[in-house]
Structure formats: C-alpha cells, structure tokens
Image 1 (tube, rainbow, N blue to C red):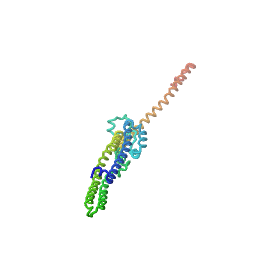
Image 2: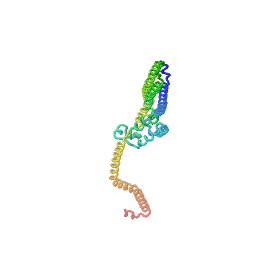
Image 3: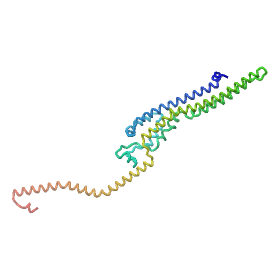
Image 4: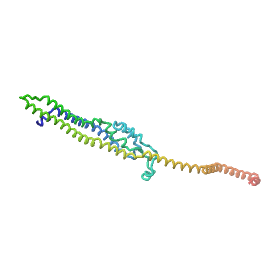
Length: 293
C-alpha cells in the first residue's frame, strides 16, 4: 500500500471532493456576508451621534436598501423615540438643557442586529452545521462498502487462497483508511469553518452592534414613562400657578388697558375746554367758565 495508491483510491477521492466542496461553499457564503456587513460598518463609522437627527433619512435609506439589514432595520425603527426633548436628571447634568434633542432607543441594539439576523438568516446555516456529520458519515459508508466488495472477491481454492487473503487484508486496510480520512476531514473542516466565521462574520456583526451603541442612547420604556410623569407634574404645577395668578393678572390688564385707552381722550377734552375758556375770555371777558371750574 503506497501513498499514491491511497491518494488514488476512489472512495478517498470522493471523500476529499466532498471536503473541498464544503470548504468552498462555506468560504463563498462567509465572504458574501463579510462584504455586506463591512459596507454597513463603514457607513455607520461616518455618522456622529450629534448629527444623527439630521442624517437620519440618509441612514434610513441606506439600511433599508441593504438586503442584509433591511428586515432588522424595520424592526429597529419601531424601537426608536423621536422626542422634542427627553432628558433624565442625569443626562441634564451631563449635557445641559441647551443641547439639541437626540434619537433614543428603547431596546438594546443587539436584540435587532445579532448573529441570527445578520449571519445565520443570510446563509444556509443548518446545512453548514451538518457538513462535518456528512463527512464523518462517509467514512463508515465507504468502509463497509469496501469490505463488502472485498469479501465477495475472496477465493478459498487451493491455488488462490494466499492471494485472496492478502487482497482481503489490503482492502480491509483501505476500508479503514476511508473512515480515518473522513473523520480527519471532518475535524479539519470544523477548525477551518470556525476560523473563517470568526474573521469574516463574527468580527463585523459585533462591530455593527458597537456602532449602534455609539450612535443611539438607550432609554427604556420604564425610563421614558418616568420622564413623562415628571414632565406632567411640572406642567401641572405651572398650570396651577398660572390659574392662581390669572384673576389678578386679568384685573391689572383691564385697568392698564382702560387707563391707556381713556387717558388720551380725557387729556384731549381738558385741552379743548382750556382752549374754549381762553377763547371766551378773550371775546367776552365773562367769568362763566371760571365758575364752572
């Protein structure tokens, strides 16, 4: 049994062909995932938290058009809050009241952009996971097939018994090697697949999660409701103060309005009477007007 003989054995060639086919399938799938996720990551890197409110439409268009993120993005948008102003006490202390409002996320971004949604759902993951089992199963299959063929060729006649036994032993050895190669290829496939997955897929979906954490502050539903309650209490307090001061302010406003409206007319009347008095004094010298005053 030589190395060339082992390499050219049909059963081993078939197992090797299956192994190479599985490796190429995994490589093509993971490369396609890598290219798409890398483009998403590169785009997210260009965004900034301070300008996310202004570039949201651009982000929405890009994520919706990408086939690897469109479904997750639609669910992600439902968890966003677009408040005019939503700050907790801690946030107010950090960024101040003069900061522009941001877009808030009510759930962790990893819930939408994760291994299942970005990788597994885009490839035939279940089939890839069964590839090592298929390779391992080819070993016993060809082993028993080779042994069955070997036993059918045994000749126990006096002249050919020695050659038949030697051939049977050689065939059994080759049958055993089929299982060895199958198990070896299965272990090698699992090792290579894990490396490819870690470098091409896992790396980028984790980076995408980090980018969403960087761009969106998380505001839970409980926190959002708490902020609404606080804001409602503040508004109620302001409204109560306004209602209490309303009668006094209304009276002051009426007094001021009446004074502003009637004073010019009264001044005009007094001015006219004075002019009339002066005119009558000049013409008649009568003191009738003086008696009136």
